Each structure stands twice: as structure tokens, then as C-alpha cells.
Length: 116
Length: 115
Image (cartoon, rainbow over all chains, first blue to last red; front, side):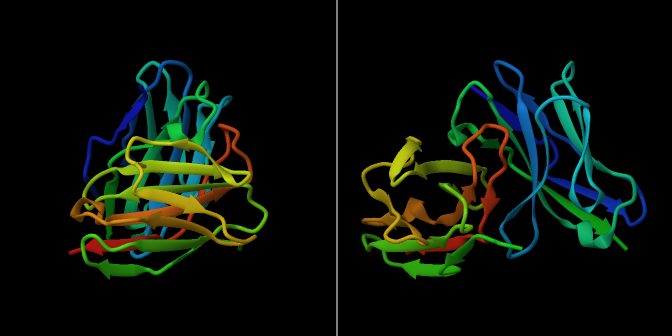
């Protein structure tokens, strides 16, 4: 069965510093990986995805993520954090062999706080 | 930018009552989903819906749950007789394609509180 882990419940960084939100996954084959963000009182917003190709994918709001197959990781990064990036971030994984959105499995979320 | 809308944003109900949560997916999307998140826990899949029928459902989606697309725009989740453990945030999502590469677009959620 597929699973995804976000080992940190909270991450705090100073504005202007780089940020990393960690995600590791477990699937039987090659994964499709997604990051979503949830701002207070808002729904989940799609940030970026990795399907195939370049291990570094770029997404919305200056975020990027690096797929590392050997470490089964898909960490979310941003070179320079903004206070407005403060939100709850979810990593999600899909098994491409499943053929169904049922298999979009979410992590438990990481609360990012960017300090001014 | 088109978005998924959900109503109500918050509903409080008594145990045993029926609840209907409503969603308006993005207009040209074909696949619809409900997920839920119990406070402090993971976002969990409930059901997916395509071409006016359920295509997948999880173990959570038992006989107390049903979904319906009563017209060309709304997508509803009904809980027939609510239990305390149904208290959660319920998210509707839609996508244009069921392809594994496609991302889902989520609504802002409906918070259900069962007393």
C-alpha cells in the first residue's frame, strides 16, 4: 500500500531564508507526487507535481520540489521565504498503476510559519 | 480563476440527523470527489464520481453515505444518520481528467460538527 510521511508537524523559518518542507513516500512502483497548500480558512491549493522527467519541478509562488528516488523523498523548497507563505502544506502520492484518484494519499501536513 | 465552491462552510447537527453537503465543481470538469479530514488527522479519500455513478469508494464510505449529482452543476454528499465520529472537514474536489497525472482542485471545505 502506498503511504506518505511528513516528519515535521511544524517548520519555522525567518523571512528571506530558504525553506524546506520534508516528504517521504512509499509506493510499489514509480510514484506521482504532489504538493498542496492550505491557507487559513481556505481549501487545498495545488502547488506542483512530479510525474516524470527532471527531478526538480517548479510550481506556483516560487516553490519547487526535488524528487529523489534513492531516498524516496520529495521535499518542497523555496529559496527565499515570505511571511505570506505561512500555511499548512500537504504532500500527496499516487500509485500510477492504480488508475484511480482513490490512491491519492495525503501526508499529515506540515505547518509552515515564516517569521518577519 | 474558476474554483470549486462548497456550502455550508460550517454545519452543526445533532447525532442521528441527516446532513447534506453541497459542492459546485469547476464547470468543465468531469470527475468529482469527496475527501474528509478529521481534526488533526490526515486528509482521507471518501468517494469518486464520474458519469453519474460512483467509480471508487473507500472503506469509510459506508451505507450511511451517498453522493448525487442532481443537476448539471451540483454535487452533494449526504450522511443519512450522523454519528459523533463524522465530525470533520469535508472537502469536495474536481478534475478534468481521471488520469493519474492530473491534479485535483479542492473547495474550501465544509466543517461538520456532530453533537
